[in-house]
Length: 268
Length: 368
Image (spheres, chains in turn brown, yellow):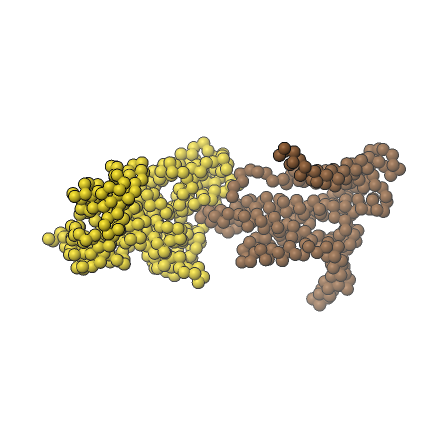
């Protein structure tokens, strides 16, 4: 009786998963086997292994890597400083608040700031450097992406640092380690799980960014995300778009497996 | 101060912001090669002393000397001191070997050297063959040993132990008490042990510091402190005790519960109000008309080794008796004791005054 009633509770969940997770994936895989004429074939998969798409894959990974790298570079020290402040929850909230603003809104704001007559260029002129093309460059693309992903990286790292037992730091210093040694040998290894989940949260969406590539990078950066959007909306080659999506799903699963938490030697 | 002094506290005060001082004007010396215990209830400042010696915090006032050098501002990683933490603080991302080797790797020793020293340290704490184990695979007692090995492998001059046995069960704790004591003797390193367990302190130490409210109430050997508690707090904290009010009639004669008794204390003012301590195990049960005190048995508990019998005299004072003999609840019994079982405590006497008086009347008694 009890087990039965529990099964009823599962219905909404199972329905949700079936409708919004399993069905779309099955549909994507199904569509990937049809070429542009609507005939069943493996043409799309062959096409994916041509230089055009391989280059696109490589560039997607490269930009996702850059974005993750710089996000981590900024997020770790920020999270570290946050744990040292007196009102850490308040500061954390202030850092998270921008992530509540719509992504498109933020993108348009940056178009204004980085534009030819924007604040950034005005500032450069005042500094005597002179106006520069900022918008539609690699720099602006990575910069804005890092800005958008930053809170998602800070949060897990902050939690890991916050949970770190302070007596580990005492113990390390007690054994003669300097502050830097304590960081590299104790603090960082013990917060690696936070870093891993942060990288996951940033790297995977960064792999399929498409709105920012168009708005901020002016389509000069072509990622797999852009390609999918173009195939579905412009060239109407749903089959090819679906094929790229299948590969993206495979990549993500692989990344998840690689960076997954290992339950080894865990003790708080 | 002798050459044997390794740590000296000089009027050390530790205060956080505007809170009351955690440690208040404390001075003491620690000698090389002995086993010291800081004993006191939680919040008495014992862990603060440990953290001051380790260098995790620095004093608000006063000076700390290590081998006669002032070390107030020397950071923890530059001190010849190692700590065994209450929660052991073993690094969960490293295995047993690497945990013990941590300090040696920081010192950049050669790997054969590290290997040899770690194996030796693990042998010392009976953990041979556990090198490759992960910390989470070790039991509480084993973690304890790893923590000790991690400290002794660095060959420090001083090892600090912050309530390291509190997380262990009773049997293991007793076992570890013996082992720690033996380890200290074999190594000859000074140990400073923090605990709130008076039995542990009495069993293990060469010298005990009893702390309360950020002050040292009394220091001395376990025997001194047990037999001659300086005040009510120490008497109560170290073992069970019967404390009643009394009057010092003259030297070696004291009056309490309306009767006069011979005692071994002197050097006090005539008719001075004092407190009398008699340990429960020093009271002997006899028949009511023979005993020095007549009491009525109120309740009785079987404690295994002895019966704990609670009695009341006619004035309503409670007398706790530890006896291997059973008493009958509700019956009248007599209690007997020897003159040396009576410990006289002066009200509000400091340790210095106490020591001075003790010396003075002992000299006097030799002359007579």
